[in-house]
Amino acid sequence: MLRRGEGASIRPNSLILLSLLFFGYLALASLGAALIGRPLEPLPLLLALAGWAALAAGYALIPSPPSWTYAAAIALLALGTLGRSPAGLALVTLLTLAFAALRRPLEEGIRSAKPRSPASVLPALSVGLILYSAGAVAFGLPLVQEGASRAGSVSRVFGLATLLLTSATALSGSAPLAAASSILGLLTGFRSYAALPALAWAIPRASSGSWRRVLAFAAVVAAGGAALGAMRGITGEPDPLGVVSRASFTYWVYETIALNSLPWGLFRGGLLFSTDPRREVARLFGRGATRYTYFIMGQPVGDFGLLAPLEALAMGVALRDSGEGSSGALALAYLSVAVETGLDPLVLGVLLTCAYVSRVRSE
Image (tube, rainbow, N blue to C red; front, top):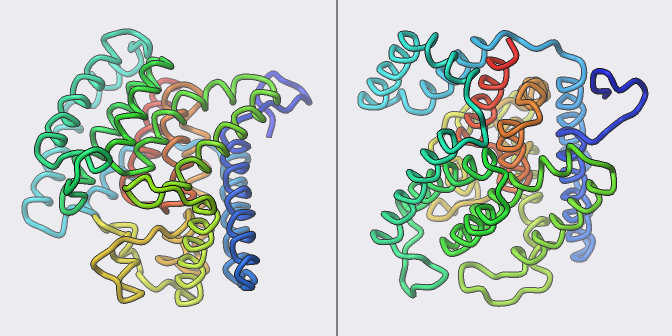
């Protein structure tokens, strides 16, 4: 994987950073399984490795499609996810028509925008803080308020706020904003909401620097993951082996999905287009009242079985097309968290949107 103009030198890029997290997570899952005397199942492991190989092939080998391809994919993802209700179908139709009518000025605005300018950062930051404040008032903050809820629409409100704050962090490159946004995310009781802004800030510094920076990035991610994993639930109680047991459990969920999804998938698109895929996965285990994480290959394998590498191939193309600036940092931050939590419409929507924006800028 060579960048243009670099001859034979290989510098860090998004694929390398994601691969570090992918194989690091597999190592943690393997350690957790070994501690309880349970070896990893060969077939799910082969599917996971095939998915990674396909993602790498898409990143390195497949030509970039035109920007409109990503816009069409976003519309199809939104239609599949929201189009099953009349209100959702009407919303998707309205947004698609609005995009078609405003596409030219929108793309001109994308090309002329300066990521670090206040005009780019402040809208995302302001709306994100407003949403976060509204969520805190309506639902409370679980880490500091006893009895605060994480059920219903809580995760969606705080999730959208986190998306906007993470976008503002990626656009600005501000360390104080990343730290403040991560603290706000931690207070919600959702570990991933704490990790996303920090990743969006750290990724450009790792991918644009030397291998020493990559090692520093890996060390920081490992330390942060261990710290978050060592907190049990939303109480903050210490759990020293939490990160290992969590990885082992999530990978076991993936294994169960994989073994029940051959040859052509168990959910048949039910995870890809679900508004709550973690609950769909939990129902497989008779635990529909909770949510299970399911590893980055859980959704492709669960939906498409042996054809899962085709989705991974497309993901690799989109990750590369997201670029190396703010859009690439945002896309990789969400994919990095999805190594554990699993892919869902939000993660894929962020990936496709970042690829679309970056392709518009380059065309």
